[in-house]
Image (cartoon, rainbow, N blue to C red; front, side, top):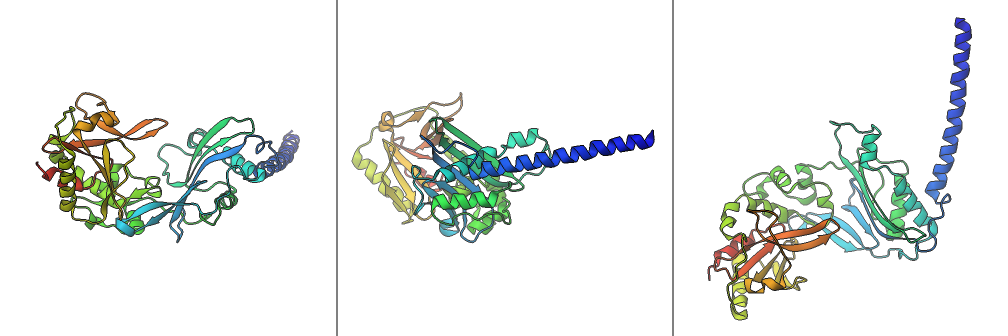
Length: 367
């Protein structure tokens, strides 16, 4: 009986192995067809890729970790206090001229990748596991039927199968060798801020680089798009003295009359107090507000007159005890706001998102 049982087990195991090999062959065949774009009808009719973000957090000498087809790539540099700056792709393939093969490959590859929740539900990651980012993909595209689709993928700890080939295809449609394939993954930390941007603990007035990270909730995604390290450091430095700003926060709207001549005198006086030629006034895209930018660090702020409140896109306080704000940007989730403070005379406001230390120069002018 024992021998017979063993033979039956052998037959079952052998049969299972054969079935498994057949399944692997079938899955392999369709995977190849999927990745080459042969096993799909996408790429015809109205199909096109509207927007494709790809970030790969692999060490590279060029400092490029992020491309956004069809327009932009980003370079990390230690210039101007450390920043990540966007540049135009020089020779991308037009979205409407992309080949069916390239379209099919990219769309099908991205759609085949599991998102974080799917990975957690499958048991790949469990609570308590150390997760570090390795890649990020966001795609918006039209199918051949004109249906608009979007997918976002965040990858951790490793790269998926076929990653190098995918990066090669992304570089192809972007027009140059922008992104690297697999390699040594960078790990986000205060030491990385020093390595990439050249900043040290000495650049933080009353704290550490880790304090800057904690205050602004910085991560690898923040520092690989338009980003100013100096801007975030100064924002932290200002936050340490928030009590200095409290008397000037906009808990109510109040208007104080001023003339254009007074306004210009105030602005000129403030720029003299800042005493940094890198701060210049450029064209503002927000009505009722003048725009000032530091051409070295990328920091910025707005100044406006309180008599021009009606021209501005003001945001009501979220709850009692919160100040008014100004719309900085619109997103699919709502608005991102800037807060603002009044000048001591009440005639002008200073608005910003990451607050530069120039706000203290603004508050020194009392007329």
